[in-house]
Structures are given as structure tokens and as C-alpha cells.
Length: 232
Image (tube, rainbow, N blue to C red):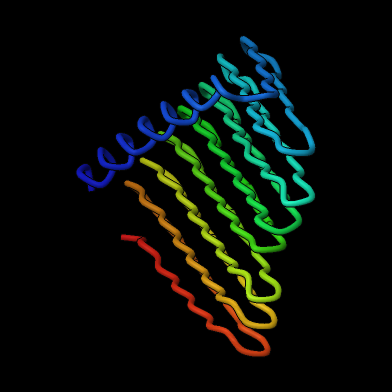
């Protein structure tokens, strides 16, 4: 089990570095920090947007990071929400929506807490010749972590709809829950692809993971769906 914990700790570190590095190209960035109090950070935008919201709290504080992005007319909406807390509560929420031909939607929510609670929720939706990607990660040591994510894609008139979702929850001593879903639909030909994965790892009691993937092709076309989970 120590091997699994080290693996996910490493994955969390790599993930955090990659998300922070992406902040360099963000059009909208928001950060908040608190020592023992409440830290809230929110980033939102519309059009072709890149967003980052980060919140951190120490000494048992509360950290809340929220990201909301909206792309239209074939736009691209990409964003990250990152929350970290030492001995308190960390909550990260991401929501990304893109509409129009060649729409792209990406949402990442990451929450980490040391001896506290970590919760990550996010959703990505894309409509058109669409691609939606969603990732939720919650990590904690000596506490409770939960990750929930969903991805939805719709393709029309021979377009390609791809929905990918990954939900990760890792705990050392307590409860870990991860739930993910991916849904894609292609209408009037085209291709619909859905991939969903859920992982929960912990040294202690109760680990739960659930993944659902649904794809459909109407009036011709092809649909492919894959779902997988890992909960030792």
C-alpha cells in the first residue's frame, strides 16, 4: 500500500507542477492566501479563454478555488482550479463550457489538504465538432478526500465528439471517494467517443471509485465508450 501511496503522491506533485506552469499563459489568473482564516479565489471569462484560480490556507484554514469558463462560436475554454490547505479544508471547483464547430472545453480541479479535507469537483461540456476533457484530483494525508468529475461532448452533422474524464482521490488514513462520468453523442453521422476513469487509493478504511462512460451515434456514425476504475 505504501507503494500505491508513493505513486499517487508523485502523480499529485507532477500534476500540480504542470498546472502551475500553465498559469504562465493564462489570460485570467486569481490567487488568494490565508493563515488560519478563509482564502477564496475565483477566475471566470468567456470567449477563447484560459483561466487559473488558486487558493491556499494554513493553520487549519479554509481554501476555496473556483473556475468558470465559457467559449462560444467554436471557442476554446480552458481552466484550472487549485486549492491547498494545511489542517483545514480545501475545495476546488471547475466548470468549462464551449459551443460551436470545433469547440474545445478543458477543466481541471485539484484539492490537497494535510490532515484535513480535500474536495475537487469539475465539469467540462462541449457542443459542436467537440472535445471535452475533465480532471478532478483530491489528495489528503490523515483526512478525507473526494473527487467528482464529468465530461460531455456533442457532435453534429458528421462531426466528432470526444469526452474524457478522470477522477482521482488518494488518502493515507481515511475515506477516499472518486466518481467520474463521460458522455458523448454524434448526430447525423460522425463519431462519438467516451472515456471515463476513477481511482481511489488509501491506507485506512473505505475506498470507493465509480466510472461511467456512455456514447451514442444517431442517424449513422460510430460510438465508442470505455470505463475503468482502480480501487485497491
